[in-house]
Length: 249
Ligand code: FPP
Image 1 (cartoon, rainbow, N blue to C red):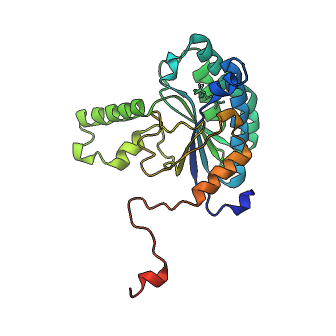
Image 2 (cartoon, rainbow, N blue to C red):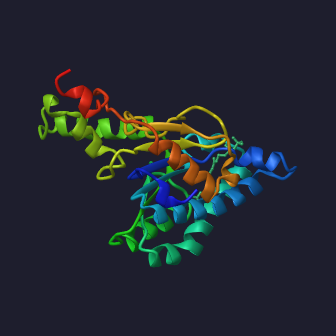
Image 3 (cartoon, rainbow, N blue to C red):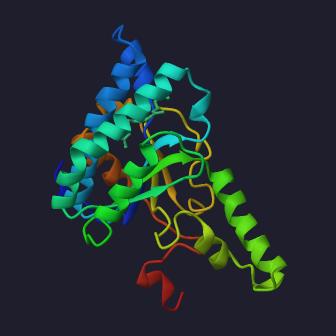
């Protein structure tokens, strides 16, 4: 399947990269090897997304609930993310990729926060695809932080309660300025959103694919985009009727 056969390309694709642990288990390997292989799939996904003209690619790298995993798995995931930024930042920058990080940036230990901020700062003016890394991210936590900031504005008299609109809520989320995802994709056959972009995905197409994340390659991505392109999005409205039916009938 070639990229040119795509009828429509989503501007924003958000991916729940699931199945690293199962990929490793199936091979009798430690779970960390699944995450390692997962980083290679991340590189391929960013390349493919840029190639087909996706403008924003959001990847769920670490959820605010992932802290409950065993300490060694957490430290391995942190290590991989740090290594990814250290090794790939220059390359992503050269490719004109802009990096944004969403999630709670307070109370992060060690050198992860400075690295994430450096990645955002270095690539701030890039005009190519935006790679949004969801790190220490949970949608309910993001909404709670947005609500608290609106509540402070109301308390300080800067905002009236009736001025709290959906648009204003969107503008207080970590994703402010980023269009809502057109497509939310989850690998590994699980069919859940797992506290990912709950507000932003109100009208997103949802796609669940069977591949485990380390196996999700360029062809899998193109096949998913093909399925997206065949869907009709109505945003709560009615489906467009063919002209012959709409006129005089
Ligand atoms: C889910 O698999 C995956 C994760 C919790 C982490 C995803 C992280 C990476 C792919 C690497 C770092 C990210 C970047 C952006 C470089 P799982 O462990 O829940 O799999 P399982 O459901 O099979 O156990």
